[in-house]
Amino acid sequence: MFLGQEFKVFDWFIIHFTENNGMAFGIEFGGQIGKNLLTIFRIIVVSFGIGYVFKLTKEKLPSGALLSLGLIIGGAIGNIIDSLFYGVIFNDSYLKIASFMPDEGGYSRLLEGKVVDMFYFPIINTHFPSWAPLVADQHFIFFRPVFNIADAGISVGIFTLIIFYRKLFK
Image 1 (tube, helix red, strand yellow):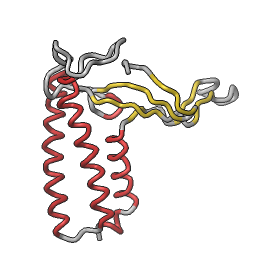
Image 2: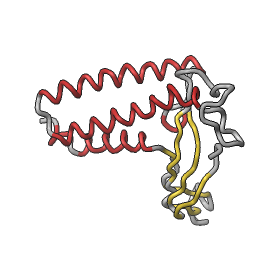
Image 3: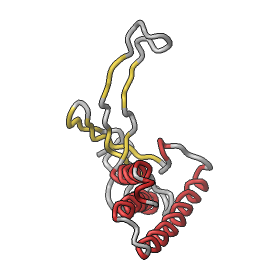
């Protein structure tokens, strides 16, 4: 797929190919140096997280807590892999389909790849009524973010820990 291309599966589910620099909602800071620091920071945090989970397994933590932490760490690893390698093994996908392992090399160096997002769920896609103050006739989409499987794993893991926190961590 090329950047911005999409396939409508249902009205409320679209496969939409986009890339971001790896932070939530495409937020950036510090240019390439910030991107490199973010990737290195993630690797460090995930390494500590893996060590923490191994410590918790020895303490007989409930399997639900371990599963939630595994989803968070697994999702983070997935996004790290994109950040580390995606730019090295693919060329640019702007207005064209990216090539895998192109002869001229990828679009960026190690640590500087973008994270691929593809799931888009515009569950409610409508306009506000004309009588609504401040937002009259404005377009409204409920659940606008485009995300990937790694993001979903992180979100499900975090929400599960929040919902069952007292039960999982006595």
